[in-house]
Length: 378
Ligand code: PMP
Ligand code: GLN
Image (cartoon, rainbow, N blue to C red; front, side):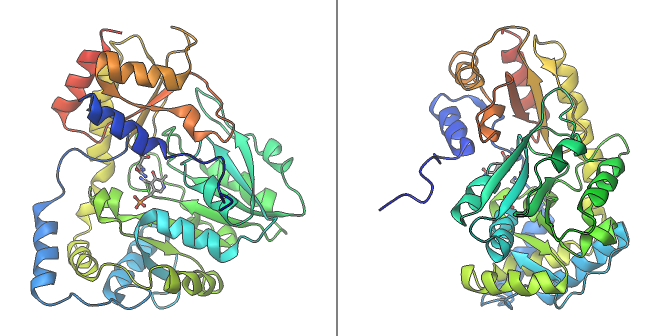
């Protein structure tokens, strides 16, 4: 066969986690907690199974869960998404992104992606025959110059993908950014895909700039999210997509033949769990404490810390130490120092290397302490 993705290898997350395992390194590469989710949540899922919620859920998701999500979005962002035709439960954020892109991207459509970017966007666009238009951001602040974004617009620009708080940089979009985006896309029919998986992981009192806050954008946007981050349960692979009715209609046409519906007992358990809003309202404080702890430890190493306003990732620069490729540096950290990170060049289409590494701090205090103890030797 002729490969549909000839230049795509194995995702960096699998590569680094495997390497960490082989060398028994502390794994701060792939983003997942090394502590368990709430036992109450597990009990609720067990209870759902025991009560017989073991057959297909409705195609768009369990109505009670969709209702709770609509309520959350209304409370937090003042936006009304209709439970019946604007909220869809998915098999994680990844499937929501894949489905949204599949529903609207045609051959030759151009998609603007801010890089470094989470690694599933570009291959999915390419798989659909779309063209990736990367806009490269640089450390330390990874700011967007919206006038430069405008220069990427052509008659074929179909979509802009946003991700705030951002993976891998931990940067966030401000109200000023969104206002600039609104101005730039006014009178166009450019769609937005806003990947908001880290909406509840935002620090120092910053307000998450959900697209749901902005009616001008909301009417032509998909918002995708993941319960993996919300519940400290990345292995459950459940998430959702919010979109206006006309986009949800197209989304569900694909969703129904992609997975049809997703895990029933987990939807029941999560719905019962999310009735208590504290479960997600306390997340920012929980992760801010971890960020502060990790940063204070890292400040004793020879790395330069980059800003981190959200997500559970901390990036560091070593450009002042040496000019080794970040992929080599990441391998060296595993093999010689026993700590796994992700080289940030993996998140640029062109492999741009700023000598930056990403560490995940969704880890127990002792894991972070042990890792930094090893990094002190660098
Ligand atoms: N988007 C971003 C930015 C992510 O970091 C992740 C994974 N952590 C996802 C999407 C995918 O989420 P899920 O694991 O629910 O598929
Ligand atoms: N989102 C997580 C990360 O950025 C992992 C996702 C994955 O393994 N595909 O590390």
